[in-house]
Image (cartoon, rainbow, N blue to C red):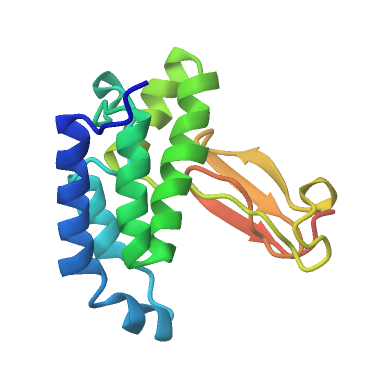
Length: 173
């Protein structure tokens, strides 16, 4: 088995390492300290094709292999783990799930803007009452109008959503 990186993978590594060292690493401590969301950096990741790196080009992604994704994620995370998490959630949890399990209409409607970085995927992993036990979470999602929106309810008002998110503090409402 050949464990050497391909030419394309080496280019991804150099591109992301250079970007991470020059653009992310200098601002990450301040952004963490001041609790700032990296909107501009996320937009730049999208322009580089990193928010849908393994999504086929026909669905708005860069069409690269999973090794390239992991290499890019490692370099971004080395500079700032928080930004790496944003990149990972969008790629793996959001794009990956729709790519693997979505029908053609869902891929057209949701995957393309996610892979292009026009939208961002998100998820909830914990609540004050459940810790990291996802099975006991009380947050629930329900469709609201317009159909592309999702409302979440629960102790934190957090949830997995694409589109407009509205929250209520009592999940029984």
